[in-house]
Image 1 (spheres, rainbow, N blue to C red):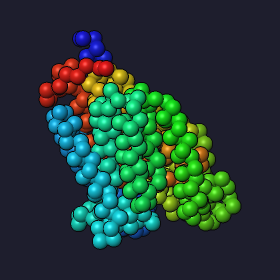
Image 2 (image 1 turned 90 degrees about the vertical axis):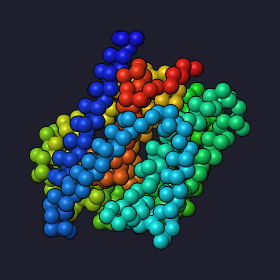
Image 3 (image 1 turned 120 degrees about the vertical axis):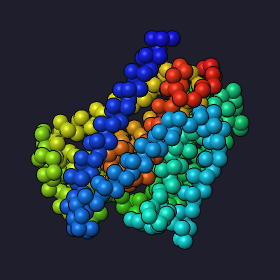
Image 4 (image 1 turned 90 degrees about the horizontal axis):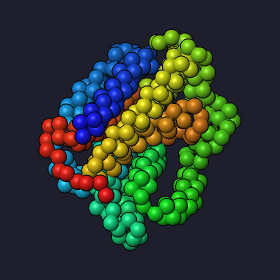
Length: 381
């Protein structure tokens, strides 16, 4: 027990060090990539970094709150939290509540700031699926009692996100849920049949919306319209290619001078690659690999089934978002509108990711009784 406790604590410390490193790198490159744009638009080069600092402060408060909150309370309140966050996300579809940016209604105005409810939905959805898998474990081989309700929940969440539209987050969340289902030991034949059935659905979603089809065609050949639809990805590839091995130097990006759109959000990896080269890009990728490694290692040492699934889901979701963002920036996937977790500018994303990290720390810290609230013992099935 003592050895296992120390191993878990060591893995948790490594996990937090990796997380902190990603946040620090994020602040450095948010300023580097956004200062010119902020100076031009707001006459204040520190505009975005100051807003991100506020997000970090709120995120730290959220981390500490999630760290000390009763895990029994979290599990019990998960259905209510899920329905509340789903309702807030649905409110963005109403013109009197939602704020439309870049063609998508994903934000609610709170006066002093804007809230992206889908970030809260990410946490709630993972917690709900974790609770669902825990409750349905005895019925996982029964289609009507376990798998069908799972599909209904996924369809509900996916439908609301697609209506915003947020195709990228819908795909990311549903993929994470199916990965959790696979880890929980649900029948592979159900997963395979669902994947088979979803293939034409995804194709229909792409071909029935002109902007999605345009993104796919641009992905296949961005040079067909270099000054239009292909402009962003071409500029991203130019930025990455300009970095060579060691980069142009931090703060010496040329693409941030109004060549590459969304340079401090969706395409911040391109600026990092330009300024730090192949070496710097590899370090970023390594940090996310370590995030995934230590996160899954922590989850594997837990005994409470709800904690295992929740921790696994949070780590997979964050890692999958990072993978998709990097693939988009390097032209390996069509544009999705997904930021680089812990690095890209965005208060809602940073705060909610800090909340997820806090919950992971809470679950790990209470595993062997050295946490800040009592742990309900649940033996592994």
